[in-house]
Image (cartoon, rainbow, N blue to C red):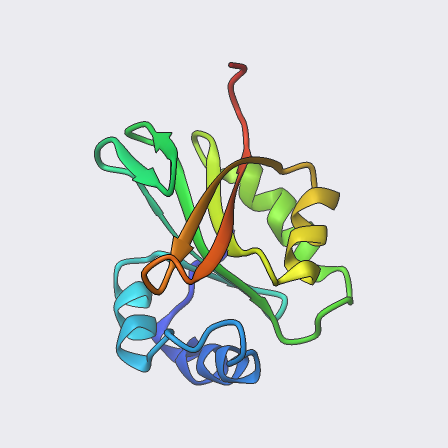
Length: 144
């Protein structure tokens, strides 16, 4: 996996702004901070932001363990070109533990993508004081 470098910032910013409908909360200071913390993958025009849990935490009604990975955003400059699919598969292999993410329930394209790459719905979440419903997905490295 190729971690983003400071020199990638402008391109990362352009890709996120291209998808502002789904990422209205992603600000430039966040992007810079994630690059500095080496928590952004930037490969083949695909961005993945993530972190590895330092302790137990929750996403909505789902409990995560220390060491699990939380995928925050995935965005592609060219949606539908297949790059996101191959980068996600490599990301799953690269991550040491289970990978979790949350997504807005109304983002049907993203939900279909996560289903198609073998992620499973395991819970629910919400934002904006419960007015914006979401789903929690996981790609497991371990069996339950």
